Image (cartoon, rainbow, N blue to C red):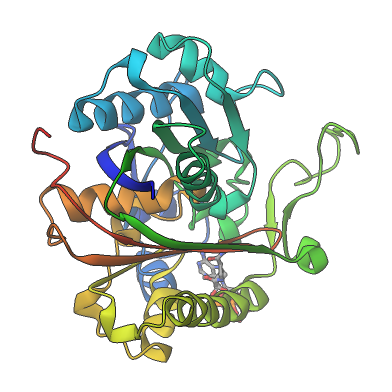
Length: 330
Ligand code: COA
């Protein structure tokens, strides 16, 4: 039986940091409100010239270095992003070219904040069916470019960044189970209304920016994390106590805490980086994972539950056993 395991991980954050205090100077908000309602203290923002591909490229190179693989080893590239560089080609192809990888499939997955885990699910299936042996799965976002910086209801929530993992074929299970879902019923609750097919109208205020029914999204996110965690564990005939680390999508500390509480998961087993990164959509889980694996508390052989939720709505999970320490040579 062929399994997939994480062999390397890397991430990248833009140098520019925007703190809550910085936002206080440009909109009617306060550090206290943002911290209390979201847990966010600061976010990294891409400057001119920093793009989804440029950030994803650096994260990918770091993941490849940590796995000890080169361009010739990569036989699949999947990028989860809602903020591609161009309408086409896929940003995964742009990264592929810059990495010097030739010929393997490279494509973007558009599942909003669930993009990285959707990509991980796909790459896992490729590897398990012998369609690939070494896959690069990236999440990279420049959400600041679709954020309305006049709208305090959304502007305080988002940030930019990228994370990536190298998945390798293995005789031992790394990824134990994945589950992916969507329900288009909730289209209007979290969206950017304009686009290629419906058209761009620069005269319509806010149309090209993220719009959200914050309260409804909040409630749905908490319920969904609970459901998908239980579904994943039940599918493995396991128990929630089997999970050493819960690594949820980093949208809001209150969502993370409420989900953890429903799952009876103490916060010292939950990875939370939303205070430093804000919501980086498809990049949030690999960014959080890199922090928690790099100098953080995650140890080899521990069991992780990754779970994401985003516009669509889309939601997904991956239960995995973290194997070799990514920072050590294989
Ligand atoms: N600063 C100060 N006040 C703000 C504010 C800000 N940045 N944003 C909103 N407010 C105000 C509102 O105008 C409202 O004022 P009012 O009572 O005078 O009308 C008040 O704060 C409460 O607003 P509300 O929207 O009810 O707050 P909330 O507790 O629901 O928090 C969110 C708002 C957006 C933080 C919260 O709903 C949330 O996190 N939702 C999920 C968002 C998310 O994670 N989306 C991505 C999922 S992938």
